[in-house]
Image (cartoon, rainbow, N blue to C red; front, side, top):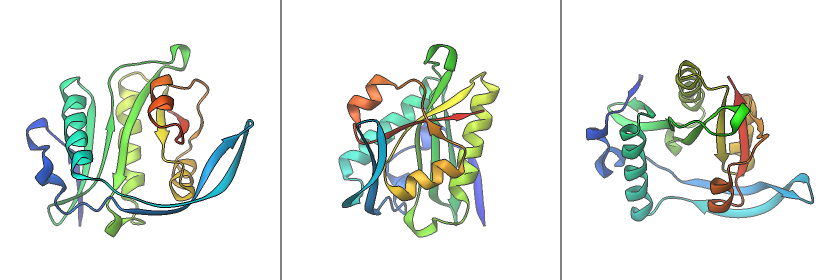
Length: 176
């Protein structure tokens, strides 16, 4: 049985991710060329290094330190999914809150965990007064299918720092 709950800063450490499998075999990705979205062959394996885990732990702790939201899914007491939303508004009238991460362990994908995590993020952001979630999302076809199923569309206003950090990501928004 999968259990869901908010995470607390003191429990976020590398050990929390010991049974989390980030791996994603990517074959095709969305790319925007001359103003048009197309699917391109772009095979690679996406996974996290130890340094990536260190950065992730620091980012999630900072999210909580700045009064953001970190929500997780556990199966047999092992972390199998998580989502994080920052607390600072941006985008002017769009009134975005930034969904900075959502990941489901490879061994439990397709079980509705991502949908449940995304719904919790939307609820939290709406309660904080946001109009939309902003997502700088992996461009893999499978990842984009998930976001489309969640009601996401191309963002009206792009977050410059996200575009610079991840130029191949798709910049999305989800109305609340």
